[in-house]
Structures are given as structure tokens and as C-alpha cells.
Image (cartoon, rainbow, N blue to C red; front, side, top):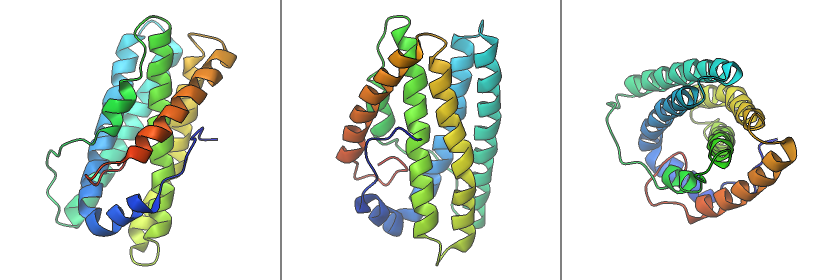
Length: 193
């Protein structure tokens, strides 16, 4: 369902154990960036009302998630602040081809893979902290469905630009490359490190 070629490693769960506060802070930024991505796509393809409607829904949900994470930060006494982004998003967006319609397809599919990886990480996080942080576990388990829906929405919207088979082939290519990027990881504790 998520079109990922790999699963997260124990290395990431070790970062969860040692840097949960920073991961939560990064998660807030991820939600904000996801809303911004959806708004940018809405602006780029404004003549396509299906894309506009779907992006508007995603913007709304991502901003809602942003404020939910900010509320968790407040409860934990973690001030919301800027942090350096990890290399994952930059490396993944670096794979986007520049010519039309390839650029449109890749923008949608890169967004879909980020959502898919978030979905996988949220499920892992929910399971990993279930015993010691039941409220946090419940929160992350609750995000799974919307992230999975965003993933499939982006894949479907890529079909506005090329046929389904071409989308599936490119998704497989990008997914393989995404798994290489996530395997490289980062020393910075991030949702996608």
C-alpha cells in the first residue's frame, strides 16, 4: 500500500529513545512543510480543480496536525523553534526531473513517498512508545490513516499528467532511490533520518 522498498531500521528507534524531544520538534516542522508543499502544488497546477480541491484538504489536515504537535510540545515544555532540516527531503526533491510532464509527476510522487515514510515511522513510533507513553502512542497511531490517504492521493494525482503504468514505473524507481536515501540516514535525529 505504501510503495516503500525498505523498512526503517533500529538505528532510527535508537534516535527515538535518545532524542524524542527533538524528533517531536522536527515532526512539527514536517507537518508545516507538508502543508506548504500542498499549497505550492495547488499554486503550480491551479487550473486543475481536482488537484486544487485535494491540495486544499491536505493543507487543512497538515496544518491541523502541525498545531496538534505544537500542543504536545507545549505540554512537554519544549519551546517551538527552528531546527536544521535533515538531508532526506533535500535529497529526495533533488530527484525531481525538470521537464513537463515529468516534473509534475515527480513532484506528486516525491510528496507521496514522504507521506508514506511518515506513515511508516508514525506506526513504528506508536508501537515503540506504547508502554511508556500511551498518550503519545495513541496520537501517532491516529495519524496513520490520514498520512496513508495523502500518499495514495498524491499517487492518483500524478495520473493527471501521464498514464497509470508510467506513474507506477516512476514510483517504483523513486521508491528504490528513497530507500537508499533513508538507508544513508543522518546523525541528526529527525522524523526522516
